[in-house]
Image (tube, rainbow, N blue to C red; front, side):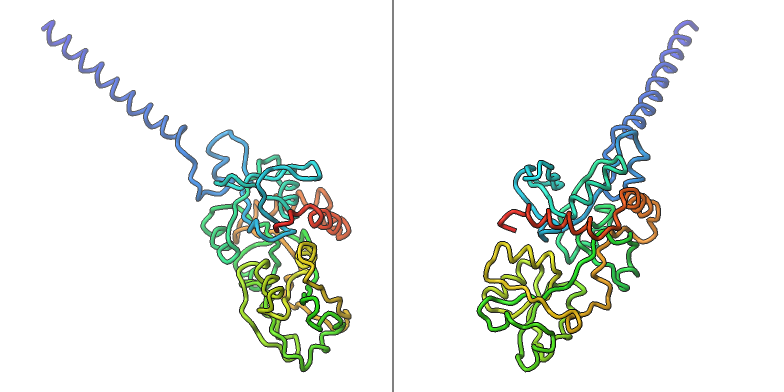
Amino acid sequence: MKRKIISTMIAAAMAAVLAAGCGSSKAAGTSAGVKDSSKTTAEQSSEGASKKVLRVGMECAYAPFNWTQETDEVANDDKAVPIYGTNYYAYGYDVMMAKKIADGLGWDLEVHKVEWDSIGMGLDSKEYDCIIAGMGKTNEREQAYDFTEPYYYRDICITVKKGSGLEDIKKLSDFKGKDITVTTQLGTAWVDLLDQIPDVQLGANYATTAECFMAVSNGAADACVIDLPTSQSAALTNDDLVLLDLDERDTIEDPTGSTNVCIAVRKGDTELKDSIQGVMDQISWNDKAKMDEMMGEAIKLQPAAN
């Protein structure tokens, strides 16, 4: 009888240990588990007390809006932001804006480098929470994403090569009869603007704006249609390029609305959109003069290689 009691006690103790082990394993798995990168910022922050992270997608190859550099040093004594999963850093107008928003929210900032032609897919698959990448808000894009109010207003510009005979053009109608070949960046609203140029020949379009400007420099295209700040940025590092100053009564018009540069979030992510917009409202980021001042600073700060 005594042996039976002892055996019963041992069995009970072992059962208790096993039960405790199962419970602690589950708890450890919950507390030490890696956060699912496909979850939104809000979902991740609710799983623990760690500081929220604003994960931003951008090209990091679209100066002066965003670019890649080797260190975090910036001439204005600010700091560039590490690019997620790399040893490089990102800076530019978009990064400056993202830092303002993250600071206003009290969150950390995480920059994800992504090709322009897949930037929407990365947002859809929750690789990052928003796009701050010089993206214009168009009717087509509004069907897929929600947007904040503009954080920059940009003009469209035609860039030609010095010595091409096109530098003195002052009106869009002056292109009539010249049969020029024009290019722009793939996947942008600018593609639909090219046929406004009289007698235009549509050339190959390119994945990056840098390739568009290179095409003009090497004669593969006679002109490119890109936004003004990016064209100014390119002209600073390539003296072969000339920006046309067209009469505003006879120039390219953009009915798509892509001149309004906004922050994109996933469709229905009202909480994040409103949080970002709240910071923009708080710092009065609806003043074009303020926007132009920061863009001017970004243009001056860009590395020569961009």
